[in-house]
Amino acid sequence: MVTETQKQTAKEKAIFLALQKDMALIRRDLEIHGMKKDGSTIFISKSNDYDHLWQDALKVLQGKRVRK
Image 1: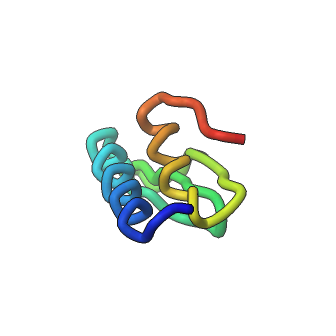
Image 2 (image 1 turned 90 degrees about the vertical axis):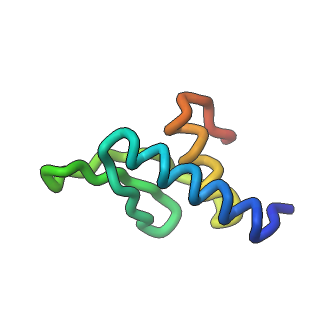
C-alpha cells in the first residue's frame, strides 16, 4: 500500500523534474501529460490506479520503466 506521504513525495519530485525539462505536468484521470512552453502537450504515462499515478510518471521522467 502506498501512503499519502509517498504519493505526495513522488508528485513533488515528478513536478520538479518536469520543470527542469521546461514542462508543466497535467493529470487527466489516470494519465499524466507534459505541457511545453508553446502549449503543446506530450503523453508521459498512464497508470492502473491513482495510488501509483505519480510514481509511474516519476519513473518515466527519470527514464525508468513503468510497472504494468
